[in-house]
Image (cartoon, rainbow, N blue to C red; front, side):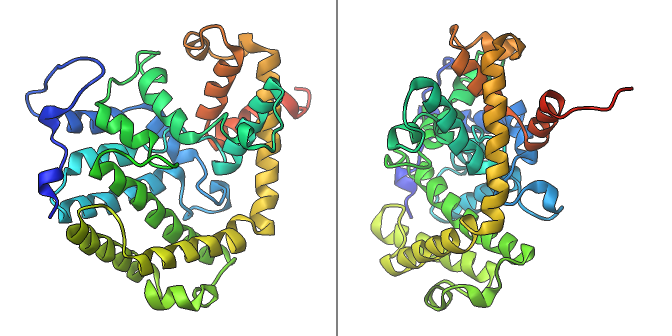
Length: 330
């Protein structure tokens, strides 16, 4: 077990000072603060991959978050690490996601790039909006009317580094990063099968042999492998064969689902909607809610970005319809 390397709440550093709670640890407080935010509630109406309006049983960004938290807590408990820290990071990791999933994220980056005179298709443009960095901004600045949540450094580090080239510094943060991948690859397969894009038999035979032949078997195999290897090596990593199989399965999902014609067709519509909303509010910054303008330091691009990024799918569609779709005279 890795208990000796677990993060301890009693040693946690908190941005808003050393205030203590009679019943809860610092990491429990962080978890509870995240759950009670507006940003967390909005995840229930933000797309994972398939637009929520297509059916009642597809994952949303909120159900994805809950599945990540469940997988991550299971791993943390098995390794005798800090479950509360793990859960807090998992629940906050996607707070900065845009409406319409990664399509919205890509379009927001492109919108900012156009304003700055950067090629929207360049690597530089992609760096202008990253959901993990926006998640940190949500908890540090946007929530509580610009005061932020005052989360511990360990939770903040896990949130911003759950994706990207920099690994989280805590083992609990690393658990969330890999649980995120375990969750989305597997539940996106489940949703793709439900939508008719895939069948189980379409999945690569090599991955089916290594990881498993159904949803539950895959998650169990991945989690078991990770726990056993982490206990043996002292780091949060899978064995090479299991990791390679997961990467192969993820690559297959990009080819067969994420870049499939039906998904891309809807994503293009979503990107068009985001582009028009961004452009409108940049031309009319006075219509951006005061709460976003107050924390933008006079930067209209920042205020518009925060506003549009925080929208749910349905609210973005409603605003778009109100601004751009003619209504019959009453």
